[in-house]
Amino acid sequence: MTIELYHAGMSVCSEKVRIQLAERDTPFISHALDLRAGDQQKPEYLKLNPNAVVPTIVHDGNVVIESNIILEYLAEVLPGTPLTTSSPLGRTKMRYWTKQLDEGLHQLTSVISFAIGFRYQLLAKPRDEALKVLNKIPDPYRRDRQIDIYENGVASSHFAPAIRRFDKMLADMEKDLSKSPWLAGTDYSLADIAYTPYVNRLDQLQLAHMWDDRPKIARWFDTVRARPSFAKAYDGFMAKPVLDVMREKGKEATAQVKGILAG
Ligand SMILES: N[C@@H](CCC(=O)N[C@@H](CS)C(=O)NCC(=O)O)C(=O)O
Image (cartoon, rainbow, N blue to C red; front, side, top):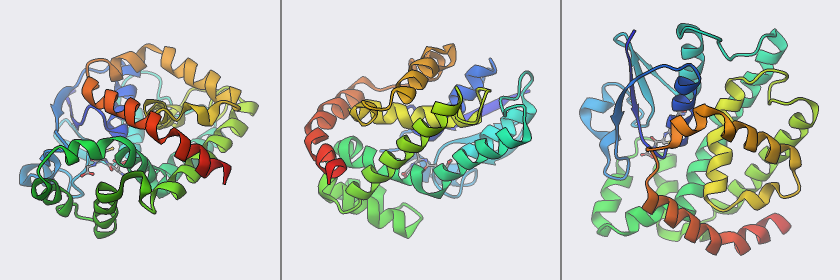
């Protein structure tokens, strides 16, 4: 069995697939894309993923896109424990969690990551070069939004609603984690794999204060980070200069974020 993974080191959707591959001890052929350079928009990649996003897997010649669909697919085809939870009701819960990522949360991660940190990678480039990459985003809504955030950062009108939605996500997580050790019940499942990168992203952006009063999330996050799959999915894939910018700019944005949450 051969798995090829087209991914980016610091892409939350790629991170969740790498966590799952690590959980299942599955080696993969890595094709790392540079998203700021627009590798995802190259014609040869668009043939695999017409949405111009990572990740994409090719499993024995078959192309699968969309990270949460990839997780479910891999759960079925990889040898070992499927990680989809043992009960039908648990699986409905698991899917309710991952559905929320697809119905907006993921896009909002892109909003806060770009507004606080990633836009500085584009601001370091000549403006016409940066706009060339942004103007090639196929989805017109996402294109306009990313251009607005490139221009305005945390002052963009997209920023505050994204922070509020994450606050709700954390409140929902705290509630479920008060009832069971894992998001979908008694088993570690694809829901926990899928949410690890999003909570970790908040942490990278210095937003861990959002769970200062949410002890169950703190415990869950410590536990998922202590699993060997976390180090395997992250070590060697993070760019230190980017993490440094996220930390520095995240600290600068703290007062504004706290203001949004208080208002
Ligand atoms: N729904 C897609 C979203 C994929 C996505 O947005 N990927 C981001 C990185 S996490 C990306 O490739 N962005 C490239 C760009 O913004 O041009 C999935 O879950 O796979």
